Image (tube, rainbow, N blue to C red; front, top):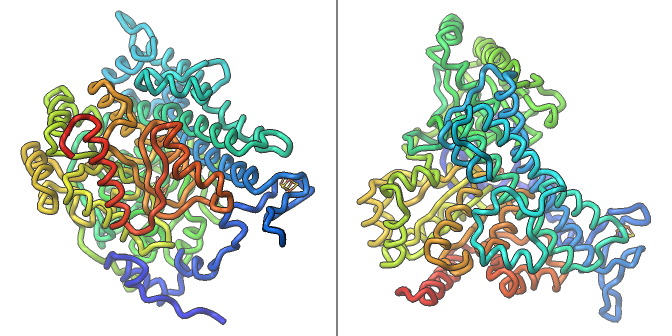
Length: 629
Ligand code: XCC
Ligand code: SF4
């Protein structure tokens, strides 16, 4: 029997979402919440991580025998090994996603150097030289393109098997590197660690749960300090370093009388070109001829974050808003690259006049319009995409359009460079604020939405509660939209902050929550932690900092969590990964890693309880540094 649909107010804290959930029901569009109902309760074995299908003697699932002993898989693997192997592959999946994205930027930089990407250029030569010099490339008295060519080679070699340590490892405090060397988790090559994880988890290889878990750390570190960091740094070099920029957020950013194009996914390579094309007089004229007043580019998920931080585009929504954006009936085209794009968007788009356009050959969607995007022909292809959207505008049924909510003001785009500039060129003012307790600690809230929670309830609740306690909050990924809609990404947001944070933020005229970019940009957060630790002469695990991903869903989010913990940053998760079938692995994640890396995971679905634990640890770390609690 079909279950009664739950009231929209229970599903999301936002009115724009609730209104569109109801419209989706009227329009007969199935959403993530409908499918979540169909899929729950989930399979217990899978939830516990106790299923294995790594070979064809199985599949196997592990339960307990009558004598209380754990059954084993056909090959003899026990529950601990199976859980660790599944977790290892989960981390490898996330690391592969971020890192393959990073590699795509190396390829674009290479095409620029070779003169094969005429529509792209190097936006920040100073950063190119700075990053190259840091990686040991000669920069003095050389042509910019020659340096760039060497940087391309240097970054590519981080993906291979010949390095002992990755090129950005100089950003890690010496004490931390010693821990990694001692444990043999120093990341060597991005592809190498991912491939080795696949190898280790083949039947008959790494059959020691702890050993597999340590390689998870190595794999994730290769993501954070390797693949993701390359993604961030090369995006900055090609498209510019984010600087504080005013923008707006919510479904209300869609415009009733304009051609609305949403860019979705993760990589800025396509969407930057679409934005540029949409601003051209030629396209604007075409739009006018079609009866529209203009062309409006809005962001979803991390592609949105990339363009928000650098170009100030408005954000239409985060992960659980992506289908709902189409339900407005006001979207002419959704242009996607890869990751976090619900396959259901094809069906949702088909219920309206919306064109769903894929651009990456590695992310094809049956039923979508595919443009095989190539840096060599980017400009022309971007114009083709915009033309399709303009054409779709002519087919829009205005009687089905309903744009909920109003745009909410935000300030976004806080890179480390921007932060330093704001502080007058040195970290000292920030360190002083931490030392005198005006800023008691820093928490990066990262990542996604998950229908297991009322949409954004945890993301927003956690952020607000931390601010009150003079804890500075950084947000990346889908938490950006949540914090923005809650009014936390504007300087006026300090009304919710504690007295110390209020004083600092009003002096600098910044919001109490700083937008630090997309999910690959969590590399900025770990780099910042490295800088602060070095400045204080301590290890990262000595700092009063946390990572948090209350509503995480993806493999990438877990990869981020693991590289944070292995870097010494404890991480709160709202729901556990599928590991709880193994006491050994669960204990390791929750406490054991503390002894190894000086940080571990905390799983707490109630943000109020999570804040108490985070706050207590921040106090403890402050006292250990000789500061007030
Ligand atoms: Fe999560 Fe990354 Fe995806 Fe949003 S987009 S749902 S991984 S927060 Ni990056
Ligand atoms: Fe079963 Fe072992 Fe094969 Fe996994 S690897 S499916 S536990 S026999």
